[in-house]
Length: 356
Image 1 (cartoon, rainbow, N blue to C red):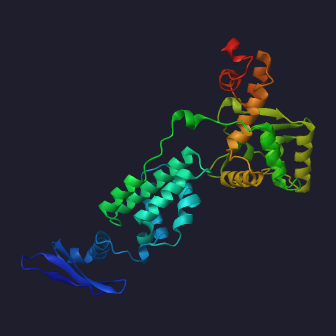
Image 2 (tube, rainbow, N blue to C red):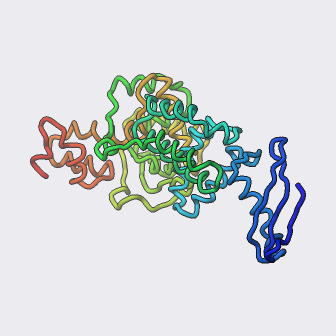
Image 3 (cartoon, helix red, strand yellow):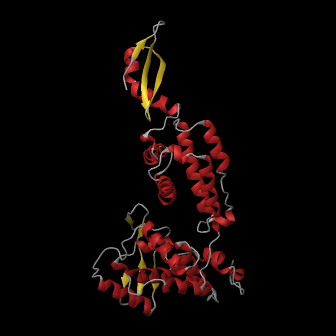
């Protein structure tokens, strides 16, 4: 590419050069500079802007390159945790579909229709997941439109095709309880000699929040009294902290002989003296959960549903007096009122009605 800067008859300066794109030469003319220095300083930026405005897709416009620019753009608008969720949507879906592809291939109307229909019909995704995937792609498309990578017409077509999937608050807050037969299938799908078996046994038995469970350390296990002490949590950024969700979250959970023995043997076999019991991130833990759920051929339950939510309901079913409710609420790290209204109100004897 030859760098050409010229002065026009009206005293203004302009850029005029030929650019080779995909084997073809195109004349690029950009006017309106007050001085030669101004044109020279802005030369690369204006040429790049001209390419985008004329939709000349080069190797620089591969999906991965534009995605990094998109993350930088979104980082100025979002908190770190929100940006992490956006990246998760791309890493688990869009990056797999669009890997190493130019934008001309990605922004094809017919292909985008097929992808959208696949998302809508995908039985492995709940409505919230579908909604988040659509939202993330619309945000990416908007960025490509703002940076002149796609035309206004293309962006409008995408907005028409990718209708936001609305999720009602009732559906958003609805959580499922895992039936006993499906829980048995889940554990049968795991090799009993694998440490994952111990991990999920302890997780489902204690009913802890995922952050509390991943924050369990060797010193949290009381071998003498067969108890697990909840006193730390692992944040999504990988930081271990002593600050828990609420004051009720600091508690001790009694273990039966089977779970206590499994935990004890696991610690001894792995020669754990200190540090975390299970050195996984939130993402790795959830990935393992989905893997074994698929192996067991059961619905894809969330970590909260298969662990905490199911355990709380199982304990609530055994409550007959307010003393039982107080004990369960304390063990699960809830206030009594929250435990009554959330987990006891569905029971036939409805102990909640007597005390709420």
